[in-house]
Image 1 (cartoon, rainbow, N blue to C red):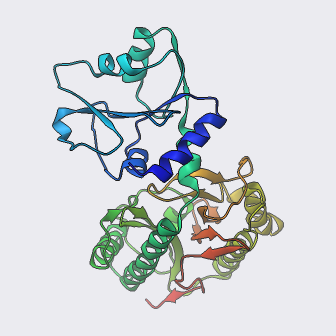
Image 2 (tube, rainbow, N blue to C red; image 1 turned 45 degrees about the horizontal axis):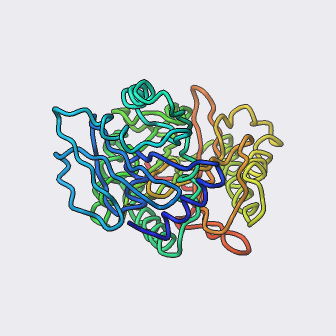
Length: 358
């Protein structure tokens, strides 16, 4: 058990008036224990009390070894895990993960009518939000790997390739540079597909005049990277150049707004203002960014509705975009880490507009 991290979670529990918390997200369990367990459909849960007492409920098939500071409670496939959990659960409020399956939550509520389940994820999310120096170093290393891998992917942009081909080029490069796997499925978009912010990479062939969005990330030492660059295959049109310049400026404005004490909604506003003032506001259709770490999307988000405030150790994306339906789109994304007096931009890959010869 990583006691320094557990102490942060318990402080957050107390702020939330929680005396017990049930943690089921594998990434959060890894954060506290250093063990990554993929439970599939079986129940995996770490119960934490505000006294520091911890029990890990796990199927015997997971073949876990004892861990310091944690009581390991195992069950078999012929036993009901909720029975074991119910015995350790105290009356009153119990915080649970926001994504804990109802196939577990409902039986526990039915078995223990004296227990009221509430969302307890913020206790862990807020602890994970503020990275340690070690975590920041790992995130920086992961991002520098991503810089090299995206360069290899962009060099593969040439006549005759498909979106799948570029995704494969990226994945191969990331693995060569030390990645353990993808942070998410690579989003490679050509031409009109670039107007769909979450277009699923497919067999679309590259054509002259296409914009090319590469939104890619991979895991290294357990930590995610994520970045986006947009290039053009052939000569960019005047409109493409204008849109690219706006998005790059919006990215810069968002990053420049980051410093301790600044609400994340103001970071969103700084990036969005550049695009709105140029008349393209209705084409920027998503939040400006999201937290990142052990998972590619973590608390908090960078949006106009965010209540979070920049604090040293926070790492999040700044990724404005403009999407013109049926035509093209542009997105430019970097990861930033809040420092004591501003922020560090992890991604060093060039954001200069690039036209690739056909």
